Image (cartoon, rainbow, N blue to C red; front, side, top):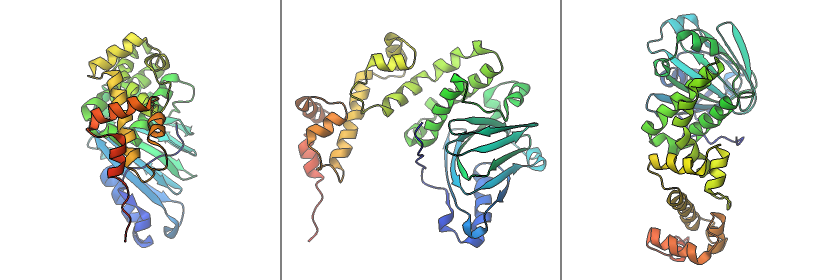
Length: 327
């Protein structure tokens, strides 16, 4: 996991709000977009700092937040008023936090997450400040027994469980990658299935793991490829080995999603080259060097496939986007 987090356009940024109005603005934003909770800020109003970004993928809501120290409480009164019971995942990015619900407490460190539910009181302690992703989905979507969900709340997940570690990586990437937010049909069901397998696996029924893991495989494969597009040794064998599957199974999974692996990689590598060539630093390196940095080791081949894709040579594309000097 990369330590930095790129927030989407903020729904709330207290730097733009007068200190007198900050607490009420934060409460309103959280209540309207996430869940009704009591919020106890540690710093004075002048020192409160919150940046919060929100996105929705079908019924799945994602809130990414950075903030000064705070305590969040879902009280019994607020929990009783819940009209649509929800399950939350709290993903710790940096620092630590504490989650308390159903008579249990757990501490979260970077790379760990916890599950808690909206229909019971809970407390979230962020003594070091907030650097966290909050994911909310309808409780009914999990289709799991109430007792099983309750037994998995306020438990640290991710440190000593390979499936939970995989889930953290998946949900963290889902929170920070805006491209994934465009296809609800392709994302929501795998997300629900992966959370379901985390909870059932921890409950001791690992036989339920195969289906959900397979359901998320295509999405996890494409995310891995996106993250390693610039690696010159990215190959079907490496991709398959990383995910503990055969190359044949790799091609079969991607084919079911309508993806031809070689074409898919080449298209995205070309798009990155096109972006760099048109950017402000596009003339700081040779065209061949930019091609090599995205896996095109042969400069002649790179120029050929670039022109086939965009109808213009890399050099002409870069020249078209040369910064005009002001006079």
